Figure (spheres, rainbow, N blue to C red):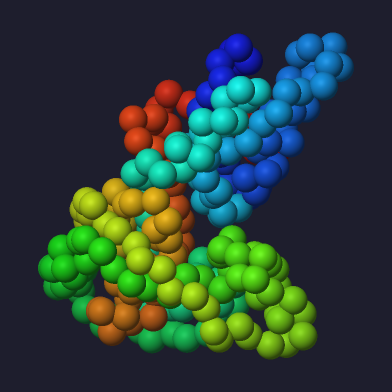
Length: 232
């Protein structure tokens, strides 16, 4: 790893937080520099623990670029599970609603393609109660986790204007009363793919949740050029 670069590209594995990535990089820097304390590091956009793919890391003076880098367009490949809605909007949460998908793949594919085209442009959507958005200075996910421990559910969530610049349906599979749509999204800053997944389901008439998410690009930075971070 070239530590002299002020910007590092990292391919985040599944199962760790974005801050875990920073922690591992700091440890690696110290190990490669005989215990020397790592320089300041930060990232240009969080990925949830279940998400994988590109993270942009600022090192030293590179951290000053992070604010502008967070505003770049982002591209994702998302797997949306239809027929099931969960509390977190992804597979970490409890199942809240189920409804069997009855269409065959070909018909469902046609419906999804039409809806995705209609979703291009700006959308005003609620964000997940488990997002990192702060309300009164407290991240939403901390409020949601606290409510969860009390056996409660956060029902009031903020809405945000999001933007879909490009969208393409890659694949649809159906089985066991569920369907999985694999979709490529190119979106503006501040767009939540979990929100897009649930909106797709709403327009289809099915509960929906995000099954997998892989970030492939941020601006001109691509995951194919990123360092691999081992999941251990």
